[in-house]
Amino acid sequence: MAETLEMKELAEVVVRFSGDSGDGMQLAGNIFSTVSATVGNSISTFPDYPADIRAPQGSLTGVSGFQVHIGAEMVYTPGDKCDVLVAMNAAALKTQYKYAKPGAAIIIDTDSFGPSDLKKAAFATEDYLGEMGIDPDRVIACPITQMVKDCLADSGMDVKAMLKCRNMFALGLVCWLFDRDLDIAFNYLKEKFAKKAGVAEANIKVIQAGYDYGHNTHSSVANVYRIETKNKVPGRYMDITGNKATAYGFIAAAEKAGLKLFLGSYPITPATDVLHELSKHKSLGVTTVQCEDEIAGCASSVGASFAGALAVTSTSGPGICLKSEAMNLAVIMELPLVVLDVQRGGPATGLPTKSEQTDLLQALFGRNGESPMPVIAATSPTDCFEAAYAASKMALEHMTPVILMTDAYVANGSAAFKLPNLADYPAINPPYVPEELKGSWTPYLRDAETGVRYWAVPGREGFQHILGGLEKDNKTGAISTDPENHDLMTRLRQEKINKIPVPDLEVLGDKDDADLLIVGFGGTYGHLHAAMDEMRAAGKKVALAHFKCINPLPKNTAAVLSKYKKVVVAEQNMGQLAGWLRMKIDNFTPYQFNQVKGQPFVVAELVEAFNEIINK
Image (cartoon, rainbow, N blue to C red):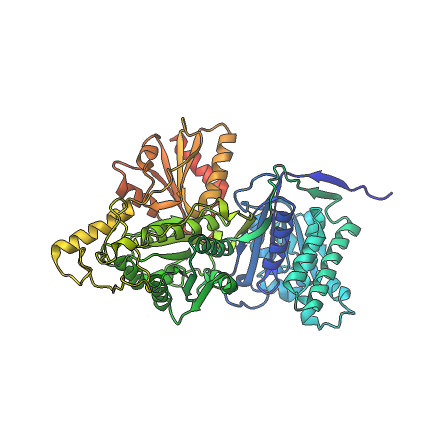
């Protein structure tokens, strides 16, 4: 009698693809995410790259992972652990099994578990499943390498080219497990390899073979799973990474302001994708310049700002150090500039492919002299669009450099992004010097209400002027070393930042009677929100206040934080936000939860720590 397949509906599932850095795990994960986002599922992804540029094949340090959390309703994190683990070789199984839930299904390529593979992965015996305590009944063991060779035997491809398609076989099998529509994956590959039709055809053939293998062998232990979308919002969607969303946010802001967009940058992981993306959009008035070093990248953007463009420079933590002199030039010249800092693990070269929140104090104070700058932090991959737009608007309207902080987790991660209608976004109105001031205008003449100096773009007759790094007289704009004038200019620059209007700090959850308020900023939003939800479901009174604008702080910050008996500040550093809040708020003494592991928070660990604080 034929085995009957049962279709089970799930609310959510977490899948982790892992293999050598050359095995295409990021591509397989991205395609599976795109397929899921296209049908309306909520997704959250976490690409976990190795730090080695190209580690030896089969080595423990060369394993690349991609985790995706798919939900029928909103999901906030990529998940602590996975329900399905794809391990393309022995090293992947050895290093990634710790991310699998008890009872998780494990897909392996048995052709990559030979004696030499096991030796490289530091297995002591050939019984690798027994050695790791894995139940064989949970393992879908496939000779993927050989099946791919057989599938492509008539393709004319050499063996090396064939093996690059192994990831697609695993993807096809996972698509069968979760009843995914292969046509979406096929279209993705046709578009990606539009100039290489043979490559696209081979990958499509292998995906279908993986799907058919699952169907013919009932590899899901006689179950197929479906995740239906519960709350569909009409619109056009795409699976977008944080870096791409950031680039689109800058383009949108420039269009809204009626300006050209200029990016002066120097390649650095994990910020380089913003440079790559913006370089594709010359037709939208975008100019990108890859400079010889970080300070040149920033200085070129200062020049573009003086010339009247929306100017951006992008980097990661080490690059912020190098840009600081040119950033300060924008401070004293009071020119609009957005400085994008995609945070990574540090100090020094540190962990280039990992994620931290350790640049906050550098963003706030990492320059000589009194040099105030607004600081904004994006909370998710899709929020990177909103944050880039907001940072651009703030810079242009208040004539100041603004630091936009993301991190490797949100920059490389992806989510389903509903394409926005630019007409719904607020206007961007730079403070151009009024024509009626011709003849009486000086470079540091300010709007009386906002304290913002007027912007005279070169080319306007009667408004020729010189700016530079030396202190200027408040009235004339001439170079000045007068002590009283320097004190005045320092205070005016600070007051201008203080007057920038920012939204009030919003409190989620049990905002009226919480026993614990969780506080965070930036890319930890999803994990802290998930921890709050889990604790509330268990009957605890918990609230969350998450900062997007860190300088200036929202006006209601002190009122919110002083309302609760217990407050915990959770961040991926040693306490930088907590220290900043203690500076700005009298008698603020929060609990702290700090980790610096280069990895996202684990929700279960947050819940345990927060429950301990409540019970104290």
